[in-house]
Each structure stands twice: as C-alpha cells, then as structure tokens.
Image (cartoon, rainbow, N blue to C red; front, top):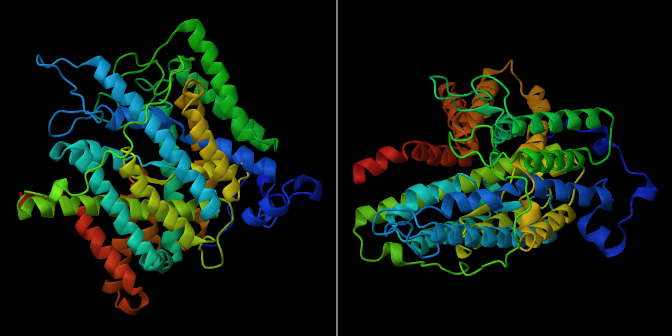
Length: 511
C-alpha cells in the first residue's frame, strides 16, 4: 500500500534547514534528515507514543498479576486466597508491583532495540489479548513458569520464521487491498479502544452491546476530561500547532489531577463508581523501589513432561494461537504505522522490514523470559508518528521513558486513560483517510478489505480482522477461477487462519 495518508500539516511539511538540528552520526544512523524529520519531532513523537502506551504498565499487572495458575498461585509464587477462600490483599499487591516493574523494563529494552536496530518508530510492550490468553486460558492449565516457557517457545519459533525469510515473504505476499484494509481497520480499532478507555463508550447492562457513556449520557468528570482534551487536540490540529498531541495529553492530565484533588473521584471498578477514573487515578502516589525478581522465572520443558499426547497437542495449539496472533498483529501494525508516516515504498513495504521483524520476534521471547507475556509492536505508535516521528530515534525516546518509569511510576500513573485516549481517537481519524484507496467497484478486492476493517473493532481483535480478510480473499479468488492470481503463501496462511478460527472445536474434540 503506497497511499498517502492525511496527517497534520505540521507533520507533512518538509523541515527547514535550520530545523534539522540532528547531525553527524546520529543523523546518519537514524536518517533523520533523509526522512524529513527533526530531532525535536522525534523527541515529541517518542514521548507521545510513550504516553499512549504507558497504560500497559498499569493494565498488564491487573491481567496477569492477579490471575492464578493451576496451583492457585500468583506470578509471585504466593497464593491469592487464604484457607478460607479470602483474597490475600498483600500478596496480590506485591504481585501487581512485580509485574509492573518487569513490564516497564522489558518494554523499555525492546523499544530501544527497535529504535537502534530496526530504526523504525515503533514502541513494543506486552501485547493486550496475548496476555489475556495467557492469564485466562494457558496459566490455569499449567504453572506460571511453564506458561511463560510456552511464550518463549512462541518467540523462538517466530524468530526462526524471520531468519529463514518466511515471515518477510508472507509480509510481502499480502495484496495491497488487504494492506489498506488492515491499516483502516486498525485505525477504527484504536479509535474504539480510545472511546472505551475514556468511558465515552461502554458496555451497558441492557441488551445493546455498547452505549454512549452512562445510560446513554455523558456523565462524570473523567468523560469531561476526555471530551475537553479531544476538542483541544482538534483545535490545535486545525491551527497547525506543533506538539498538538503531547500538549493535549499534558493539558488533559493537568485537568484530571486538579479534578481528582478537589473531588476525590477514585477509580471505576467494574460497575461500581461508574463516574470514576477508568485505569489510572490522576494522583501522585508514593515512590517505591522496583522489584525485578520475576525476571527469568521460566520453565521451558515442564509443560511437556509427564503428560499424554492429547495434552501435548492442546499445548501445541495454544502456542500456535499465540504465534498466529503475534505474527499478524505485528504485520498489520507495521504497515499501518508506516502508512501513517508515509514510510512505505511503492510496493507498500516499510524500510528495514527484516530488522523490524527480528526485533519483534526477540521481544516475544523477552516477554516470556521477563514473566510479563509476549511483547509485540504497538499500534499506539501511530500516535507518535502522527506527531511527527519518522525514525528509530523516537523509539529510543519511548524506550528510555519506559525505563525511567521504573523509578518514576508515580508520575506515569498521573496520566489517566481519559487523557491518553484523546490521541488514540484522533489517530483513528488520520488512518481512516486511506479508505479511498480500496477499489470498492471490484468486489473481489472490496469485500475482503471491508471484512478486515469492520471485524477488527467488532471482535476487538486485529488478528480476527486480518484472518477474515485473508480467508475471504482466497475463497473469492478460488470461486472465480483465479487461483493463479493468489500468492502460494496466501493459501498457506489462509489455511492456518481457518485452523485458528476453529481451534475451540479442535480442542473440544481432543479433550
């Protein structure tokens, strides 16, 4: 996909010579001038990406830090419940703190590696969806070290696929119409994430799947902070203000801190306190030293020892699920971020794609070794690219911010999801512009692209959207007698997706 993307006028304008402050080795390595960027843009873009991703430091511990394995133990190795079945708050709190520290450390190291080696403006951290699969499907069948061992195996397999060229070959085999559908679908998906994170869209108690705010009304200060921040971002954007996204995040955060200091709204927990803050309460908390004792708690072979063949097959399918989700989430993310930054070549491929995929594969292994679940590329990186980031230097900035968050967690936790969500929604608008580059007059191209776009937000899964597009594209071509127009790898990948879609049925038959 080589379509131009609507971006802020500031981001699209070529920099003046006096703006190109990066020079020498730094400029040569990251190609800052060549990609039409500046040092200031890269720093701003890297910080914007960090602030839109920082929620994972708070959210990942709530998912895997509070879940138990088959023995009823938390990641820390401590029990979650006492003999009377009551939650042990101290144990859960310690587990959450350990996961938060490890999450920030692994995300920082992998994002810096992406910047220095991949030289692409991508942030990496624990993958949402992947961590939920690990916490709620895999861990209950195994011990936590064994579950993390499966994550490491998934990363090893993906790395082998990259080094043999298979992953890059699949990347290049995808037709342009599907690549466009992937980018637009991801734009809709992250906009939906933004609306949900802000509480602007919620799941109601009634029959409808979602609704506006609380009972169809925009009620509560957190939603007000989101709306004010979003309108501020829009006004700054149309006025061509530099740093519009970062300014909006900081301003909305400052407003949130002031509101919380006066009204003490607290957190929204499930259906309780519906007008509270969704993820981070914007208030300064106490500084604590990071606990990194989770690093290296991995059992690579324990899951496969002393079990029958049907159990092993089930574990293989679970690894396959992790692999497929990680594999194609990354492909969609890289294409979408590259399109947003106008970094794709005429064939729709990003620069240094092999290096990008190598880092992403290593990140999957690092996530398992760090006991934080598979790390992967984040579509929120498009927010930093929308702010002007074009090179790996922005990723270095993002990674350093993650490492600093190990010690500055109270400052990071001041940014409520309602403030960061403004950027996610706005980036959805920026990415939506590519929809005109699908040939809607040709149903062979339009229908797969459409399914790819809509199923990402409707199923809350990038992988499902991509899989539906692939399978439909191949099926239509076969039905039309155009089998030779389909790249052989598309048949392989579509077959794998077909297995992915019915994995529940397969597991049911072998259990």
